Image (tube, rainbow, N blue to C red; front, side):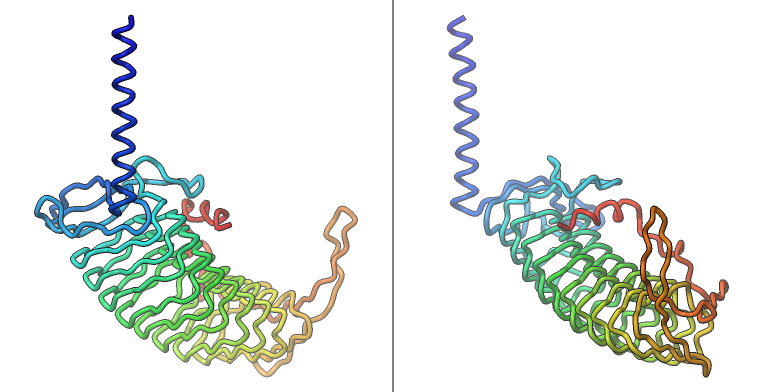
Length: 361
């Protein structure tokens, strides 16, 4: 019995010593414990998991093969909340150096790295995958290389301390939810070549004051700027044809908006509760105006097809003995052409992404 006890104690002591040695190596040498596999398509190593502390340098090669991809094996289909499972990446990293040669930063690669503050992406990277830096709540600085062509869905979702980011001219596509909830983001310049600002791309960017939209953009997507409360003015370029549902809903600081002659469709609730607007001219090119586009805006005058519409204050019975004072535009302003109107269901957010949005706090 005593021999068995001594053996157990010896094994336990060895395990503790090994753990201490590994932790010491990580702290003292910025070491990296990682899992990887060979990616035949890219002819290099793909890192799928690492454990690191502080400032981490990802290796340039593993077993003589270049590291070409970093991504997470986690498949979160319902997203019960940002979390780290045993196969996901470490969340104790404050800075990451990615070596030149890495071509793809894949799905959720650094998602929920809650202490990550800065990252430099090398020129070799051409793709950043979905939610790659999602929920990195202390990330303040990102350097994006000129080689990048796509910023995918949810790439920087809920990065609440990200203040500024320069998007290079090489980027031609920005996915849905890419900057959702980046509440410290103050300004953004979109490069020429982007054709659509997607669903909820800048939704709830509460500090956003300035955005430059290139002439190449034709669609302002569903809820693209919803809740951008500090956005005071916006120049929409000629070429835009669709301002989708909820596009600027809740932009309470918006005081001026010029709708170009190219626009044909204004979706439901597009400017709902934009309380600072006082005068809007809708060009004759618009053939579809969705429901409640200009409701909840006091002191608003809208001119359309030679006719003037003025918001009116009314009292509504909301039931349970609740009477509410609201502002409505005359119903005959809203004419929905079902053929031309961009339907809300065609812009649905993937259910797993929508489930994650409440976890930005």
